[in-house]
Image (cartoon, rainbow, N blue to C red):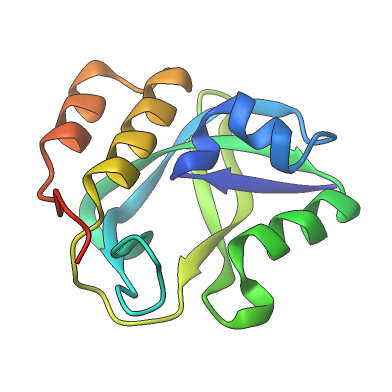
Length: 150
């Protein structure tokens, strides 16, 4: 089994269980030295896609899941790794039990662009379901977004 760190819609354990039913949540943590951003606006059908980039002094809330190989393949399909939308990278996650190594998906494209209001709301709701601090969820809900699809 491998650990996966979710920072977008998969923060929500219910969402994750529909995509990877054999991958239990192991707890939450922080990607220290990374920030949540959006990119690949030309790759998504609903605006820019959530991704993370290295940024000293920033941190991103994550839910850590224990993912068996067969669920990892399913997640890869959901995330479009075979289409080149996302690529997997290994990161260190700070948890209450110490540091763990996990993988996550990052957009294989340029940073920039705005997510749709709906997509940003899904991420904020997922963070709330995962137990993110109130100020983190509030900051997500205040981020700039596209209110109407082009």
